[in-house]
Length: 199
Image 1: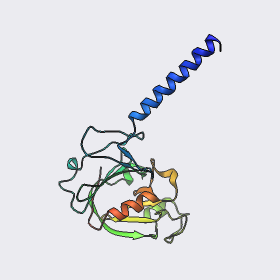
Image 2: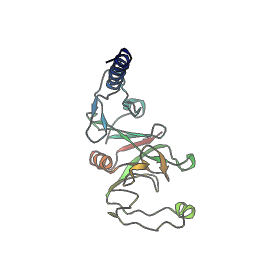
Image 3: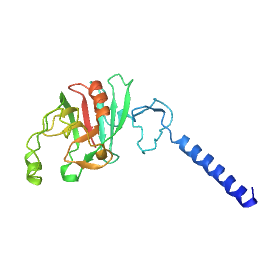
């Protein structure tokens, strides 16, 4: 091997080792197989590779009675804390397309629906007259996915989606979307009365 080839080989080893080390520093406390992030309490704030960061429920809620869901529109992340604070989950989301479609503030989960039926709102049909007036639950193209948490605000939901390209983007008409496997987990954790805050 020539000196030039040896130097190139050494640079590759150095860069590969450096990148591996940097990547290791970004690994979350507990990466789940399903793509969510589970954090342990205590210690310093850790970031995962998607730039989601662990948040403390005390900064947003006075308690975790019935569990608490925080949706951060800016970081496109949903945080969940169980009532006993033993469970904390962080999920990537889709968020509304624009500020005029975005609602912020406190509400609660008022209904939980498996295989929800989707009906576009009157304003959605006005903007998109070619859309169907209803898509039955369980249909493969149902925009609400497999599960939905209905919020105290009319027409607002936290729901799944079959179109995984939407997650991590401004892509909804007001709702918060999750991967179907994530909404199924959140659906099991949450209950009617779970606190919700959109910021």
